[in-house]
Every structure is written in structure tokens, then in C-alpha cells.
Amino acid sequence: MKTNHRQQKPLARKEGLVIKELPDELLIYDTETDRAHCLNETAAFVWQRCDGRKSLAEITRELSRKATAKLDDKIVWLALDQLSRNRLLIDPAPPPTRQGINRRDMVRALGLTAAVAVPVVASIVAPRPAEAASCLPGGAQCGASVQCCSNLCNDGVCAST
Amino acid sequence: MVDLNRGTLVSRALRQSWRTHHPNACLLTREQLDSVAPLLYESGAAGLGWWRIRDTEFRDTPSGELLHQAFRLLALRARAHETEIENLFRLFREANVEVSLVKGWAIARCYSEPALRPYGDIDLLVRPSDFDAAARVLQSEDARNYFTDLHLQMFELADRSIEEVFSRSQLVQCGAERVRVLAVEDHLALLAIHLLKHAAWRPLWLCDIGMLLDTMSDDFDWDICLGRDKRRANWILSVAGIAHALLGAEINDGSVAHQARQVPDWLVARVLKNWETPFAHLQAPLKHSAPIRSYFRHPPGLLKDLARRWPDPILATVTVNGIFGKRQRMRYQFGNWLLRAARLATTGGVN
Image (cartoon, rainbow over all chains, first blue to last red):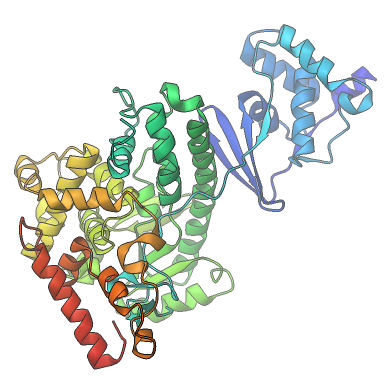
């Protein structure tokens, strides 16, 4: 059973995602669910290697090489579990957490041995930050024509463009 | 310390915020950051606010986390916008139409991280001969969902011909496409006047100026930037002076720096005042309770509203084509008020 898991080749979903790489995290906006996610370095490392060709064992090996320490498969499973829950994998295989292995135990085990950060896929939750509107749209109140996108302030209201 | 006015706190929070490294500690206390974070958030400067504090002890505070989350969202939005611009310019190339991108991404790309400069719409400048073709592209199925604004001319560039502007423009890479943007000299002029045209209420606009002043190359041509119109040159120099005074922007040219430092104190103070409420709906011309013509039928409240309509001195100076000097502002404000009253009388409401 363990061998089967290790040979699974997860595939990351790419369609409908806006992806932005930052120095220490990866941001993903899911246009289908209208949700934004922030992957820490470990989760991003795993997700970027889910190409449908690399097996779980191979991803674990690559992560171990990066961390210069021998890592347990569980750390990759934990990443896959979170990626799957956030719909960032295509048809993912059920990870051990859904097959009787307790998620808390997994994190505890990782905590004892991890040479890399525990993978985290966090939701970005914040009110919509303002953008810099350059001119007032049609219908907005105005004091002078130059303020309106339409260049026409009519009776204190910007005309439509 | 918390009692410093909020405009001053905004100025401290954003001082040289566009720079990659901030050797000096944040100029705010934690309480001051807490009071100013919502202003940054609501005015489009949350990304810059985060950039400024990301290496300080404030990064893990609730305000720091708010700004960090905003930065992440803005980073994703910037990425999505880049794709839109790439698609749009592919459509223009396929239609053989030459347009120039103005503000927005054209400025965001100059920051060390495009997320620092959020923008909403896509402003495009086009020659009259290309206008119809460009409009057809924008109305096509592939482009109609983009928020675009097509300009034949811009108030901010009224002292230079569109041919001049296009001849100085340059092509830069955006994904797989080459995108035409204004020369940095024209862009600085445009941004400076644009800021004044809107009474400088959005701090982000002054950060654009600070960033461009800080990063300009040695061959930057100030003569082109300042243009041929002395009044407009005064406007641009005044904005450079404000960016130096409030955000610590460096001006590389000694003569220009000297002229910029002559910016009147009242102008700097007025910008700080406008930064106390950097929200579009609270700006002086926008907080009118009703169109003036409505008082013809319902006079109560007219006097109060007229007082509210006393123009912002920055806006007034620009709209009556004045100069930013030590004393003239009251005259310009009165001129602006009269002008609007005359228009109201002669057009029946077209302001």
C-alpha cells in the first residue's frame, strides 16, 4: 500500500489560475472559486513539481535535496492534502490523512523531523484594497470637468464616456 | 506622538517607501501605524506601506498583517492586469494600430515590484488617425471586458503635440508582447499635472513622482519634461518639491532641485491636509450634497453647500491656469469659483 502511494504522480491544476511568484511564497488566485491562496515555500515547491510525471517519492527526494536532509514522505503528503483541499490539484489521489492516518499525528511527526517549514496553503482574506482610479467615472459627483474621465462635469455629475 | 496629524503620518509611512532597501527604521510608532494603516489601505498605498515595514518589527503586528495581505492581493491583481495588457497589445498589433499606454502598468513596471502600484483602468493614448481603428479593437469580443480609456489628447500633455509624444515613446516588454509607453520625461510631466488636477489627495500619486525622481537616469532631459509652458513647468517643479519635502525623493539635477525647493509652504501643508482623508468620496469637490441646480427649486441648504464648494487651492490654481506661488492662491480660488458660477449661469448647469 505504501509503495502505491509513493508511486502516485500528482498533477497540479493550472487552468483558471493567476499565479504570482514572490521570493518566499507563491500566490495563486483561483478565478473559478474567486479565492486567493498563499503557498509557503515548501507547499510551493511541492505544487510546482506536480507535473503528472514525478512520483511522490521523487518529489520527496527533490525536497530532501533542497533541505539537505532526509525527509519523510509525510511532508509531501501534507502539502498534497492541503493543495487538494484547495482545488489546486487535478484528480488527486486520497492522501494518507483520508486513509486513517491522523493529520495531527502527521504534523507532530513532521515537527520532530522537519528540516523545512511545514507546508502551508493559506487563504488570503482581506477586504479589497483600493486601486488608483485616475479619473472619476460617469455618474460620480464632480467640481470641474478635468476631474471626469469623460472630461465633462455636467451639473456636478461626470458625464459617461 | 499619536496626535501628529494623519497627513503627516501618511507622509512618514510612505517616506522613500518605493525603495528596495530601507536602512532607516520606520518613522512611526506602532500606535501611529495602526492609525494610518486604514488610510494606506483605502487610498491604494497599502502595498507601499507593507514594502516600507516588511523588514521592521511591525511586520507581524495586526496592521502589518493587514498591509501584507493587501500586498499579496495587489500582487495577484497586478499579474492579472499584465495578462490583460499583453492580450490587448496583441490585438492592437494584429490590427496594425499604434497606441501608447499611459500611467497604470507603464508606471507600475518602474517600481521594484509592480504590486506596489495598483491601478484600475487601462489608459491609452492614440493618434487621431488611429482612433477609430483602436476603438474597434476595444469593442471587439476579446477586449470589451477590459476597463480601458482611449484618449485622443490629455489635459496633462496639452503643451506638447501628440506626434512629439509618440516620437519619444518607447517599446518595452510585457510578457510576450511589446508595449508602447511614454518617454519617462513625458510621463513625469503627465503624472505631476495629473496629481495637481486631482488636488493631490491620493498619496500614491506622489509616490510615483518620488519613485521616478529617485530612479531617473543621468540622461533624463528636464527641458523636455518641463516643456515650453512656464506655468506648467512651475506645476511640475512644485510637485517635485512636494515629493522631496514629504517623501524624501532625491532630485538629481542641482538647478532643478533648487527650483523645486521653492515650493510654497502652503502647498505642502495643503497636500498633508488632503491626505488626512484620502478617499475619493470625501474630497472637497465631491462631497457636495447635491448638484447646484437642484437648489433652484429647493433653496434650503444652498448657503451651506456653496461654502463647501469653495475650491481646493490646488485644484483652483490648475483650473484657472495659475502658478504655485506664495500668495496668489486666494485669487485663483475666487477665480475658479467665479468661473464655475458663470458657467452655471450661461449653460444652466454645465460646470
